Length: 601
Image 1 (cartoon, rainbow, N blue to C red):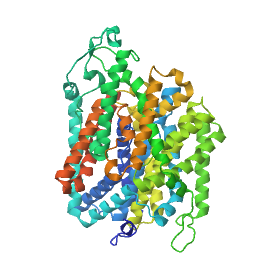
Image 2 (cartoon, rainbow, N blue to C red; image 1 turned 90 degrees about the vertical axis):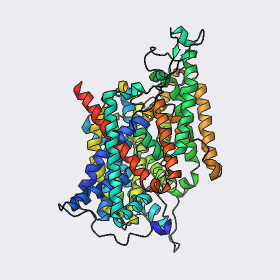
Image 3 (spheres, rainbow, N blue to C red; image 1 turned 180 degrees about the horizontal axis):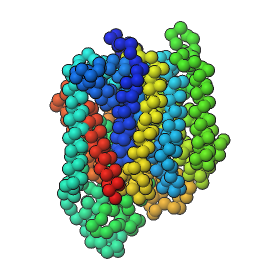
Image 4 (tube, rainbow, N blue to C red; image 1 turned 45 degrees about the horizontal axis):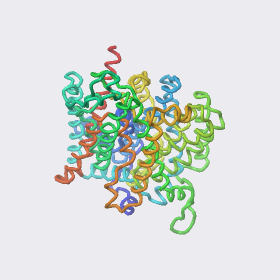
């Protein structure tokens, strides 16, 4: 991989940082930021949008060229455009799908659009500045693979070498987006969901909690067990793959199939009406073992990256034996000035907005620099950014320093988790730029422009979509599992174990042990056996989302497995594009429908 990744594209034109490339990236990135916001509130994480952004930018300007309006983008202009767009799309990771709504629910504190824009932009800027300092070490000296960036660059090279195939990809992206949007609109008006519930009836046990509540039993529909009538989660399942899909299926069987009926019968949580959804009631108990599995597994996997962690703080030597210096793209003076500036801004904002003690805020930013470095290295090596682990390390740290302060626990961790995620994502874009022979300095400018556009649009979308997190989240429509995980950790240190529902402590203990064992097996077993080990974070995720979503993720992953087996050439070339189109089409139409409902009401 190294010999390919170090070789710039021989046919790369010199045009790079142009106004049209940046504006195109900002425009498409703004739209993609809404997609990631929508997806993140559904399943707790966003989707990498670099490849989708590159296709959109290339296709848009190719259409203009074919109509004689303007010439198309050069490959380096397309790289700038996708860099800006992917940075904008990452704005959801700056807090909008986890700590920010968690803070509102726990404390009642809300932020205006302007305040949200400033806060999320500041979080992203920390990640950008850290990526500037890391680029030379991780990309030039160590030449880490950064698989997503590698794949984006190779796809862009294919776009410019095979223009006809590129247009087929673009048409597939647009066609699947329109199909998904059409089905979403149809579901809204014809209510397919109500017709797809799985029939069945489970009788109450004599003397059990359901009988005491005056209920004869429950149906699968009470738990949200149904077939997902829209396409987005099937598309997400196709992207995440069979291991995640099977892990989610196992998780939903254990949680909503086995544990949920028993906790209702035991009377540990109160069921709802016979014809209503019991999802919220069940979630009050299931979230604890689910979060324990996710957090324990993520932290254990993080601990297994100890070599990467040590290497992050150990200077590497280049071929001639000399110690590698810092970035030679940005002078050390400017880099230090930028580092001091973003630190000061972050500390001031934490102090002013959340009344976090200045020294605590400063400690949080310093911890951010360290953990962002680790996250970027881990992402560069295995293509997985340990965002959950990054946030939880900070939450646990501030729980010891300031246990009764939910703002410090959540928002200091917001800086760490958001910056680490942004830094890792941007390193993939910088890797793609190196493969294409790009100058990284224009990419930094594109990143800043991108996160600004994403903050302006994404924060507006969040406030329109979720004006009242306390009543809208933790429902079948908006499971918001990341909000659940962040809020649960903060609550645990605020209220203590005594505030948990009956049986939750034991369930958390068992869940944590399961998460640790799965992470250890994943690291120690040989590769051919490892694929049969369930993913701890995915297993825990199924405890926190509607069973209908879990089934859709599983079926989508199986569809991807089938296409890879029976039509491998099509799968390699088009599967990710088709799935990305489905996600973009439904998430955008879902945003429009949600906004229409709010304005109509």
